Structure formats: structure tokens, C-alpha cells
Amino acid sequence: MFVKANLRADDKYFIADHVFHVVSCLNQVLFACNNAYCINEKKAIKLLETFEYKLVKYDKWIDRTKISMRYKWR
Figure (cartoon, rainbow, N blue to C red):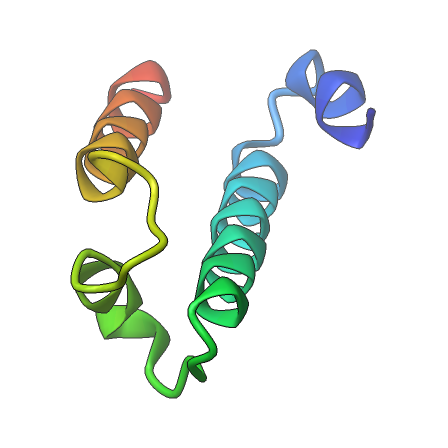
């Protein structure tokens, strides 16, 4: 809802912040499903790949999202 409103305003930082929060929340859900705690967010994606309950190719999706955001805003 807020993201759509700011797309027209060309507020890149606001949108990037929302994407970061969505990924962080999804990470927390995946950690909770695996009865684990997220201590270091920088290594969370790699650690999630070792869990029983995980999204297929989650790390690749995160990488694609970062790359597509980088190229759209040049």
C-alpha cells in the first residue's frame, strides 16, 4: 500500500527499506518454523539454506531481487 504510493514519488530509499523489512520478516518466520534464533542477519540467508523448513532457492531469489533493484534505479 505505502510502496505503491511512493513508486510515483521516485523514493528509492523508502522502497529499498520496505524490501529489506519484508526479507527480514520472512527470515524471522523461517527461523521460527525451524525453532531457531536469528542472531546475525548478515549470515541469515546462508544459514536458512541448511534448515529443514526453507524456501526452495531462497538465496537465489534474494540475489535476483538485489540485482533487479540495483539496475532499475540507475
